[in-house]
Length: 461
Image (cartoon, rainbow, N blue to C red):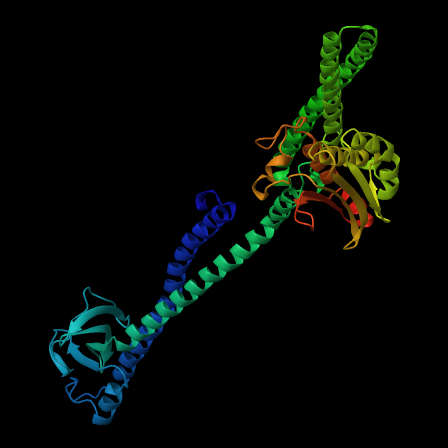
């Protein structure tokens, strides 16, 4: 997962080259800082040699005899390092100072100091050798100094550079992490917008707000969404055509069966015709349900059809059909209607209520009762249907919303689409549908909770 992270890849290509550049720059900075410091130390050493040259004393024959004690003590005085010196004549004979100091590795010119490293008394030393004239005689003055100050200064430079280098690297990583995060935040917003979409939202992504680098991806997603929408529309169109094609011949078949039943004198023929009429009627209802399902699915639903409605008005317009259906099974139909405003599609809401009540009547034994009601609840509207049937076990309450699913042991007529259609229509209206047990503990209660009309309107847009 980490290997596929754009942010980590950006940091890798950002911090990696910068680290190499910083390493090269660190070496360059080290030498730029150390060389002037080393030259300063060397110049101080050369100045000591020049000072010594001006303090030399000579005898009558011109040869160096003694260096004043005060001058020698001043020359050797140092808080950190030890100072050594010696003076030789042109023949290499020691005239004064410390014996055994390393000599210059190469010949050198008069009054031109030569710097070199060596070892004296088991200690590393830095030396300067200065050939000069004293009382007309050539002498070579050598001054040596241990390297404690130099090593200390060198360590200070290295520690400072490493500390600042690490701090700068950490700062680059933090800034790079924050910068790449801010640059990729547009992708996070795009991902969040897509994740919030419902299954019904196949609208294209607004490519104008997408970063240029990601627009090819957004274009590909839009093309995919368009293909999905086309496939859904084709499926919905096919389902609608099939339903329409089935309803017309089936309606004619039912009419012909009714005529045949009236004209037949045979009981057996009438019974067969009655069975065929029942089958044809159920097939017509199935075709109607398929048509309603096609209209309720995302590709068939259009938010512009939503209108301010009252649930009691919709229920009252369907009462006669429901009363006839309930009378066929001697089921008492009760109503508890209160004002309940919704923003909805009247055709789909009638289909939702029709499926809920038809299911209740089908699965309620003869002589039972069914209650349908509506009211305002929690700022929205609630419509419910209760029956006195055997009820739906909790383990089955999610399964019954699946297409063509019927509970085991169910003998009542039905296609298994009623609750599926009700759920799709509820989703179209941003409503929640759930199954519960009535307060008396028997039967089934199906509730559909609609949001406030204002929220439905804003969400539809």
